[in-house]
Image 1 (cartoon, one colour):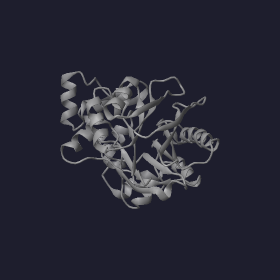
Image 2 (cartoon, rainbow, N blue to C red; image 1 turned 90 degrees about the vertical axis):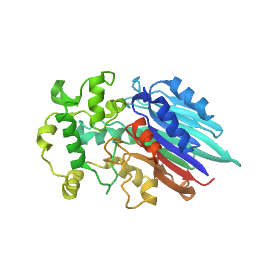
Image 3 (cartoon, rainbow, N blue to C red; image 1 turned 60 degrees about the vertical axis):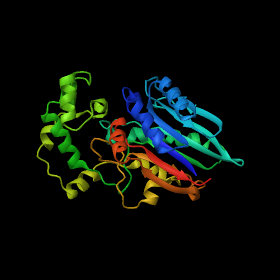
Image 4 (tube, rainbow, N blue to C red; image 1 turned 180 degrees about the vertical axis):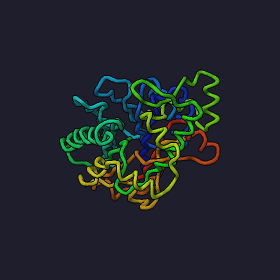
Length: 322
């Protein structure tokens, strides 16, 4: 059995290194795709701790957030694709599970940019087309495309009203304040003890403060009295474009989680307010027959608390027969 895990570790995992290492160790993954990598020293440390080989992919725009893959399997090749106008890169690795078998892994992190046209979906589509072109340029091989797509799948539910009420609770607690340009975002830093205490009182670990989104200020007052209703969630969900995942499906890929769990929500973000499924494992037609399982890793007991505070994303773990 080959276990492949994808995980956005949030802004490099700063101050959460031990929790992240614990999540990865407990997962039992053979191959780990990481997004929002900042410190390659952390990647090297994780690789040593887990007995894995590591490769990293620097972002296209020269920014701080990159990609990495950790693997127990022999690594046949790797390449970091970078394109002009692409915020991050596309990291490709070729693995040899054994007996001459090969599997290629494509790791992506499409941009959020929810304030842009079509709530960022237009930009995500531009980057996704680069990724698909890179894949078409390679010799055919069973492969997976994994990572944080920051996009909703057709038919997926969004906990919109619960999320807005949660954000308003943080605003009323003084943790979200008016910022420049009419935006609403986190105040202070986790190192400030009173602020840290207030975050904890609201059920958000201060180390995850960087994962709390910045929203237009008008969202607060306009949604302060929005009731939590499934019908209203569906109405708001229909206003969100869902091009990126549809493009993957049209290209012949299978959404592994939805394939095995037709009705489950499978929310991967945010850990402090599970509201959406935006992390994916897509299988090519050649790889799909090997798919055995695909589940969101939330942990049990104490591990659940550690998983929920290691990042603002839950990991997604797929298992394939070899």
